[in-house]
Image (cartoon, rainbow, N blue to C red):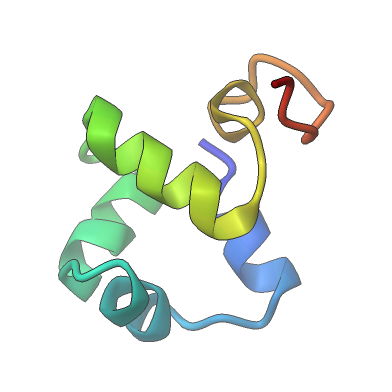
Amino acid sequence: MRLKELRKKRNISQLKLALDLSMNQNTISRYETGEREADYKTLIKIADYFNVSIDYLLERTNNPKINK
């Protein structure tokens, strides 16, 4: 998942992201290391937060644009 890359590009700490998404910092860390996978609702939250598609977040495409 591109979570760490997106977070670092915007200079957002794990703690800030966790607080903004009403999550635990430990959870963000585990998503970034691959120890844990986000569920569907969480993927939507993260994609909406960074304004990217879920496919981009999951590295299924290199195009971050959301197709509506």
